[in-house]
Image 1 (cartoon, rainbow, N blue to C red):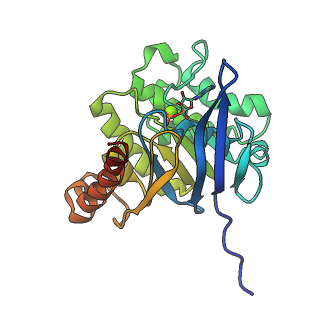
Image 2: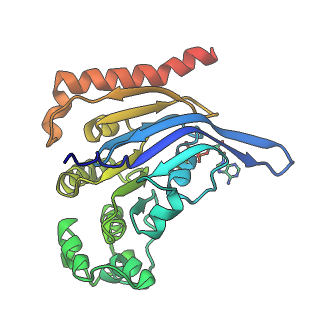
Image 3: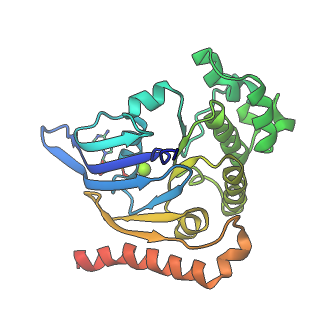
Amino acid sequence: MTSSPPLPAVSARGLTYRYAGADGRTLLALDGVDLEVGAGEFVSVVGPSGCGKSTLLRLVAGLLPSQAGEVGVLGGIPAEAQRAHALGLVAQEPGLLPWRDVEANVRLPLDVTRAGDPARVQALLEQVGIAEFAGYRPGALSGGMRQRVALARALVHRPRLLLMDEPFGALDELSREAMRLELLRIWEQERIAVLFVTHSVAEAVLLSDRVVVMTGRPGRVRAVIDVPLSRPRGEAQEASPAFVEAAVAVRAALRSGDEDAA
Ligand SMILES: Nc1ncnc2c1ncn2[C@@H]1O[C@H](COP(=O)(O)OP(=O)(O)O)[C@@H](O)[C@H]1O
Ligand SMILES: [Mg+2]
């Protein structure tokens, strides 16, 4: 007997999204976007500010209603994946509750859903390196520490797809580099699918199996660049020819938009 292949984490076809403007006009944010994220795959999305990256992530998360085109998540519609706690979300702002300590913030999704494994909380605090801060309130932590808490909270229900929207965008460069390596390490252990939005080409290449380059608004997919670097990855690979080649390809795809506009 052959087992069926694992379901793709994300499968979007012709995703198009318009926002209603205040003056009755509409703003086309996404135009016919196709996107595939395989089970356990790490895919990044890069593109100019305002090109619809967050809109795309919100559609996949089921936080925005689908208007045109299709988006499948783990073989169903996004709302089903959300109900099954199969989605984790990390945004640029950690969105922690200031009156809860670190442990209680990570535990929050379990408290809300009255489901899941409480033993997972302690394991995650250790995994993301914040166990010794379990009793601290978010206000007493650095930005990088707060994002570790947000990451642990997103993983508490053992999601099969992690959605990250510029999660390190508000961090200083050193914290950001540390968090990249931390995320790589955690992803090697968890092997869940990740859809990762970033402005940083180096970050996208270091982390990803594939990098999706979007055009300016309305967002379309301009190119999908494979990153043929071996795993596990680390800083040493940033100097390798394959890394440099992939980064050059991503930058060229991003720049080819400027020529369109000129
Ligand atoms: N709630 C909203 N109402 C109206 N327009 C919006 C809304 N959210 C985003 N937009 C517009 O849609 C476009 C895409 O936004 P967004 O997905 O946030 O882009 P990105 O994350 O790539 O910066 C932008 O032009 C933005 O101004
Ligand atoms: Mg955004």
